[in-house]
Amino acid sequence: MTDFPPIITGGSDLSEFLSANKSAVDAALADAGALLFRGFDVPDPLAFDAAINGYGEMVFTYEDSLSNAVRTNVTSRVFTANEAPPTTEIFLHHEMAQTPLYPSKLFFYCEIAPGEGGATPVCRSDWVLDRLKAETPSFYADCREHGLRYTNVMPGSDDAGSGQGRSWRSTLSVESREQAESRLAELGYDWEWLDGDVLRATTPVLPAIREIGDGRETFFNQLIAAYRGWSDSRNDPNRAITLGNGEPISADAMADVIAIADELTADIAWQAGDVALIDNFTVMHGRRPFAGKRRVLASLIS
Ligand code: FE2
Image 1: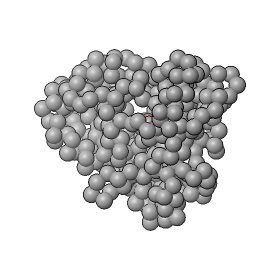
Image 2: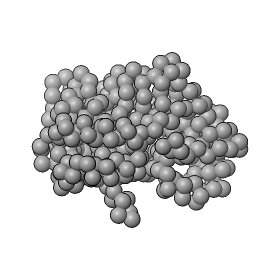
Image 3: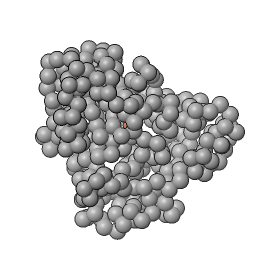
Image 4: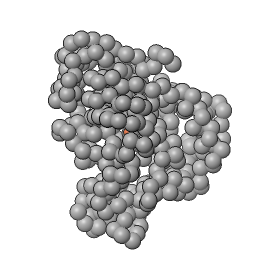
């Protein structure tokens, strides 16, 4: 996998490049699932914002999303990727696949390269699914038949110390419990209020597998991230995810999924000025732990 993701090198203005080569870029993205633009002139977040503008697609805003990550906006369409502490690994996932609202593509921009660690692992989810189908057919059949339900326990105000720390007020864009309940009902969630202004919310059944055309399927979900990583003072990974029929996911099946995905993962080792474009339906991403400074910004496409 040394050629994944492919690197597109240039020395020019990335905004102009993306605007002039939009259809070629999209064809390359459809083929590879992820692209890394290196050596372009992207000195700061404003240049990154301009590059997204040059690409010219609709932006998916953090405010509108049901993402559980605490983030900070840098421009109206650019935000910090996740405020979780450096030592916290963020495991492979498709962005917001644990909610009914998700972006189709993601841009990442490295403003400050990490001192140590801090790569962004990427993994072709269609390749993972092909392997699962062949090697764990009964788990594949369960995923296909039942889908998944995710449970998240959200604090009343943002907890930046957790990768899952976004408050229920911010997540649901509401101010009161009453508004939260009507939003949850609209989205088909089940919920329960816990002590300390904490909300436990469970999604409706969401597909575990997505068809992406030409008979291809991807493992479009947050199973790995939820199972390995949704752990904080409020969240227990063993309760975070079940099959759509309420059955737990077997630890053996998860061990297989994790081993296959790890085997197929490549790391984007960031250099300052790099920009990555990721097809959120085809490729999972995560974040390796790091030491020292690191600033990677993100933007989402509807
Ligand atoms: Fe993410």
